[in-house]
Image 1 (cartoon, protein in one colour):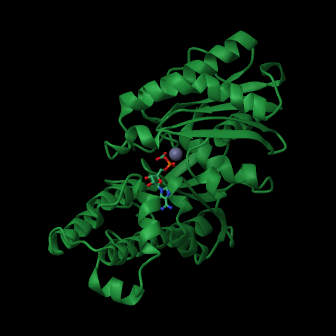
Image 2 (image 1 turned 180 degrees about the vertical axis):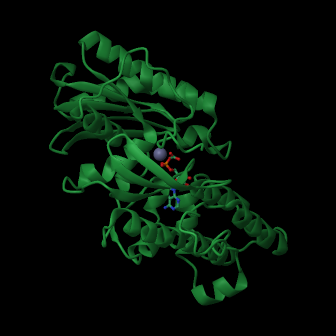
Length: 352
Ligand code: KG4
Ligand code: ZN
């Protein structure tokens, strides 16, 4: 089975082809960084127009990279939410059009499920259930994956997502967009980590609240961002040296890693109790999973960590093709009148 995947839910236009052996035949990602840089964040209208401009060429290139034509494809999977609705519509309609023209099954993929199933693309032996920390620009969630299409959300952020916090804090420190990779880069220049932590104390919101309640697994990042702002404001105006920023970025990254790993340890305890599995599989996914300090903090948790390779951490279409393939294997495909969903929780009961 060979699936074409399409991803356009944020600021990456992506097309990929994946087969049922887990081989990525092609995987093209066109970043819109340049288009949005001047605005310090993603502008939805610009994103949608850029997807429209590039998607058909990219799909053609993905087919040609894989040495295939549309006649070799067995199904079309496109992200249908959650995300910026204009962009989602572009990818979804392109996917539907190809499926209609070629009489192929269409699979409406939840972008979050794309991230959640990526570790099964890279490791065909990974079995359900597993615990998932999904950390991206729009989401910070602890989920249990019980099967394809079957997720329980155990924790989420009450305010900003971790990636959003990286991006906003970076902006406060005067670092360019996207903040995450730039914070990581400059933090690596920190000369004296212990001194940096002492110089810039930062809060770990919620980690001491209801410490023993394993059901309390939510996150909060806005206080951390505010504390970064306070430190920046307290430094001599206009005199933020590269060394200052390196120290602050280091302290910020450490705080984020500690918040995430503390929550995950707690979730692992609950997972062991719920599923009677001593050595759970822990999956780190989403764009923030690229961060090496965060990876190291989670590696230290009491579980077997699976983190996708860097090129599959951020948004891409191979994960969408794979999620589509997993759905199709369970006998599921979607009608061509499927409606795009700007909000699309993975756990249907999460608003309880
Ligand atoms: O999953 P993703 O590519 O897009 C969605 O939000 O769906 O995640 C993007 C987020 C951005 O906030 C970006 O700053 C963050 O992932 N990110 C990082 C790193 N690389 C990307 N955050 C921390 N460290 C990184 N190396
Ligand atoms: Zn994403």
